[in-house]
Every structure is written in C-alpha cells, then in structure tokens.
Length: 317
Image (cartoon, rainbow, N blue to C red):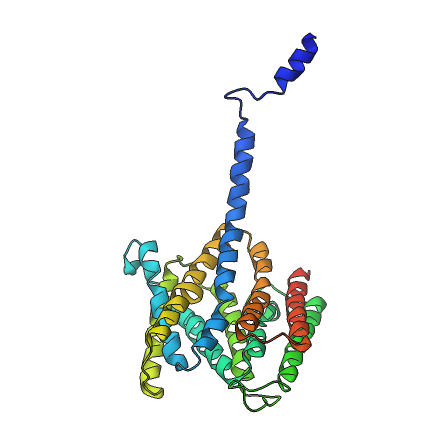
C-alpha cells in the first residue's frame, strides 16, 4: 500500500521542481529554431519577387530597381538606431554590394520581360549551383571534385530543358512563339552568375554589420535612378504601380536581405543553405499560380533537376 501511494505521489509533479537542464533544453531548441524561421521568412519573400516583377513589367527596369532598393534601404533605419553613419563600410565592400544588389536585380527584371517568366526565373535560380562550381575559383583552399562536376552538368542540363521547352510556348506578350535561344535568357544567366559570385566574394571582405546592407541598397538605388534618367523613357506610375513597388521594396528587396543575413549569423550556414533549395520551387509555383498557366512537364523536370543538382553539389566531399 505504501509503495502504491508512493508511486502515485511520485507521478504527481511537485512545485518548484522544474529541472534546470530541461529549461536549458527548451531554450536551446528555440534558439536553434530561430535561424530556420528567419531563413524561411526570407525565402517566402523572395518567392514573390518574380511574380511582382512580372506584374510591373511595364515599368522600366532601372526605375523599378532603383525605387525598390531605395524603399528597401529604409528598413535599416530602426535597425541602426536611426544613425545612417553605421551603414559605412570600406569602399571595396561598398563596390561589392553595388555589384550584387544593383546588377542582379536589374538583370533579373530584364530577363522576366524578355523571356517566358517561369523559364527565366528557373534559369536565374542556377545561382546555388553556381556557388558550388565557382567556390574553388573564388575562395582559397577549396577544390572542385567529381561530384561537383556531375552536379553542374545536371543543373545546366535542367536549364537547357527549360529553355528548349520554352520554344514551344508563347512570348512574353502572349502572341508569337518564343525562339529557342531568346536573348532574355542571357540576363537570367547573368543574374545567376552575379548573385553566386557576390555571395562568395562577401567571404573575402571584412565582416560588416547587417545594417550596412542598407548602404548597398541606397547607393545601388540611386545609381539605378541615374541610369533611368539617362537611358530610359520617363513614365507615369499609377497608384497600383506604387503599391506594388512598395511591397517589393519592403519585402523581397528589403526585409528578405536582413532576415537572411541574420539567419546566417545566428545559425549553421550549411543548414540554412539547404533551405534555399525551396526558393526556386516556391517561386515557380507562385508565378505559375498567379499566371493561371499549368506547369508543363519541361518546367517541372527542370525544377527537379536544378534543385537536385544544387543539393548534390553541397553534399560532395
């Protein structure tokens, strides 16, 4: 009887007996989960970029890039305590930031209006694979292994599938069929190369605070608007255009950068990198869903090939 009572009483939680190690375990779990949630937030925002870009395809690309980046830079004001002086970085680092943010987004918006958007978007998402291939060239101490080469061949074959498949579709305006080698795929490939090389080159410059990204965005935005004034026709933006530009600036070209940077600083870069493989799939799905066009087999096959290639590349030893 006594043993029965003791067993029952022993099963009842007693007050003030929470084990410290259990509390520490819960805190550690939450801390490990936070970087993944930040990364998923950035990925969710980036998955909307192509769709929003297509909705604004009538806006000149330099103007769209410039306004979006300027709006995105405003997010860093509260992060830096409303002290833009904290955005300062060495000139080589600033030049690298302009190379990444300015060049990548301009080429992406250019590709989305001169090639079938879904296909151009998938070609753009060769950048995770290109990071693997270019790493031995840009970063010292890294070598290109047979698995890397196999992954590269698979990824580029996926890009070829989607480009050749786009030949049977319609042009961006939905009228004439797109040629197999539509020149719009060239800026898509250029965008992929720029973002991959930019991401790797950031490892070769001095570490910079997250708020410094606003300096990259602000300078790139001003440069884009200067190019617009010199090379593009003036346009009048509607209230709808302004609303979508604000959404782009605050979301995929603003908050996404800061979420991603924070995720990489708090978490395991290898784990965060694996999550990035969701981006081409989500972006393609959103773009296809909004355009109300069913995905054909070439797009689906290409998406699987490109994502698989990027995954294989990171698994190579």
